[in-house]
Length: 246
Length: 280
Picture 1: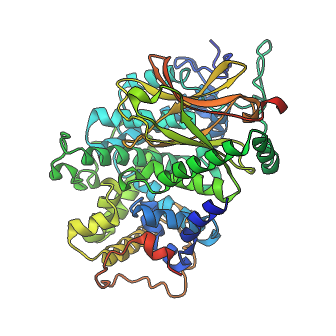
Picture 2 (picture 1 turned 30 degrees about the vertical axis):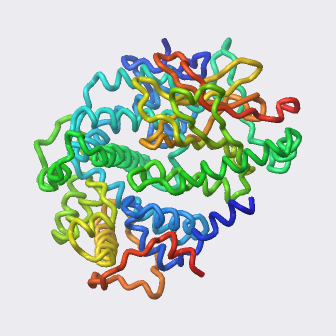
Picture 3 (picture 1 turned 90 degrees about the vertical axis):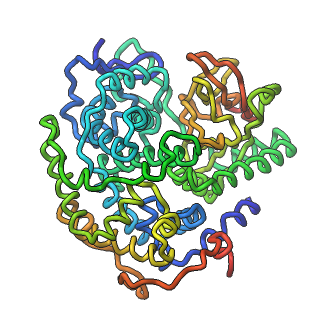
């Protein structure tokens, strides 16, 4: 069946074995074609990003079956909601990895909330950041650019202080909220908030070479101090209550 | 929309400095639910914070490249592509439709708010009242979801807030008679807004354990149903979906949610009539 033939139900079919111009199209074009129900576009995006997505979901979930399902859900979700990607807000790859991370974290949090889940042991929730800070055996199938980008990001993370790296690791790979991190590390919530903000700004500066869009920080409000000072203990007010006060 | 405006108003009180301070954690999805909703409300009216969020999301996107790539099993690709036919993507007009194949109808934006509301009014004030009451409950549940459901809920909160803040109208998805006996009585809302070409569906209280089944959203016209998409729910039975329909939504008789097993609908759960069919 020709690659670009549209079925009566509106789905353009994809023959995985057939040559496709989709393989050479850029991400923006494929994303556009996806909105028209072009399955070949999805197949091309899968071929381009499945390894990155799966590497990420596997790193977060550390379970082959769960990672497979999360990877599957990411691409099926892309098929169902192609308009969710807004080109004006960044690259497709970065967006897709955020989606993948969100999906994996969702699964991770649900497992944590199940008291009899196999990974209920708190030690299982610890992320071994060293396992990916030290580059594993390179996969020859990796695209050079993606590989280089990953190396740069790992290098940038390695330049962070161990404490900042640990905070980002807990938030990004562990899926913990600032409040949960504060409890885990026995620190005031305000301190954790300040440290995470500083760590993100520092990482943005380090990654500016990789992504020029990160170069120019938005002008911070005048009274926004970019320090890493330890904040006084916070009494954990109800945010809903706090913001409703005039 | 007075009640709804009051509900959302407190979220807009977050000062710019406070919101700016939270954007890194917001991009990391590390905020509490209340903070998250407050920042989302602020972002809707602050281009500067939105620009900073884009920057922070760029950082988060690159963080995702840190783990080494790992090829998934080849069977996953085959399975995924096979499933595309069961879960239909958003249809849209094709620029190059092969001859002999009827092109899908072009999507037409929903009618302006005033037209939609006037048509709803013809269906009776009682219907509208029940629609709004249940609709607000559904939206409220989504806005106050448990912290553990933040990833999908984060986007859902944005969508609900955007629809409602832009004059959205809410219709209640109510249980089909008898549907709640075995599965529990879920509820939901269908939300349309004048500046949104597609409707938003929010559900809650549906059973999360489906024993191999899945939820499907459908639209019906002249007794003919069309599956729109799979609807995923969390452990609370809550979920949301932006609905793409082959024809304008106003041209259908009803929207509903059914439980499907092995590709066959086994039980209708929620539905809402669209009270303006005669003019479509």
